[in-house]
Amino acid sequence: MPKVSVIIPTYNRAKLLKRAIQSVLNQTYQDYEIIIVDDGSTDNTQDLVNNINDRRLRYIRHDVNRGEAAARNTGIKAAKGEYVAFQDSDDESSPERFEKQIKVFQKESLKLMVVYTSMYRINSDGVRTRFRTPRIMPQDGIIYRKALDYHMIGVGIGTSLVRRICFEEVGLFDEHLPYYVDLEFFIRVAKHFYFYHIDEPLLNYYEAPGSLGADPRASIETRKVILEKYFADIKKSRKILARHYFGIGRLLCAREDARQGRNYIVKAILAYPLNAKYILAALLSLLGQRSYSIVTDISIRIHRWSSKNV
Image: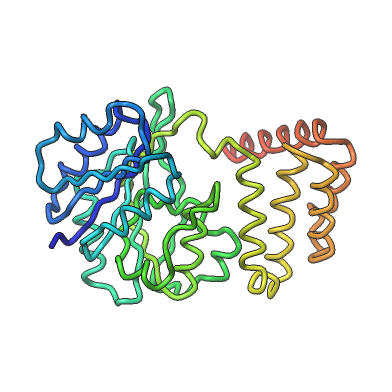
């Protein structure tokens, strides 16, 4: 049986998939299987995979496109390894990625379930920058409260190696979420288990144009679902509850509906009235969606500029 099952979900990325597969084949750690989950592609993905002559490669196809979470879950159910690694079909793993992650698991306790790494982000112009990844270590203990407060954004599932037993304990990826699928899974893991961050970029993450990250509606709806799903625990901290309300409200004000967004911002004020930012945002929302968006965009640009020039 292989030690590691590498799951690569893909959809109409035949031109990029070979690069991703090759980065796994180039690993210094070789005790693995590769599971390609084709999520209903209409290009030549199947032909490309069939032309790669390696007995460790397995191909599973969905008849229709079911989404990234469903594709990952299909791969998990088929996995034979003690550990499960994830990689997107347009990304590249460093040759030493799995070797370094396995070594961490070998020296840590069984409460460690996820070993993730830093990564490089590569934009459409080919410019590579180091992505700011949150550092979470076993000595931090159970970080469930921080996870509820979105502190785990940036922990990439595409850099993660996970004990397969973890999915038996906390469940698979939520196939109903349009966004933050990784984050919601990590929240469940964080309630019971530990994480380990390798502070070395061991993945090249290629930004895809038109990704869900550019869709504010997906982010808003998922934030609402997470708030409802974990409300009993979130409300234990008025600060965290307020930040959830404000996160939804500011997105609505900037991209969708200023009136509805203001209702959420008012909820944030009622939950934690000591934050002047919430009051200012509520006043700005009276200007309407367009004006709110312009003002906040200018504010963000000023903040970024000042941060770079400190």
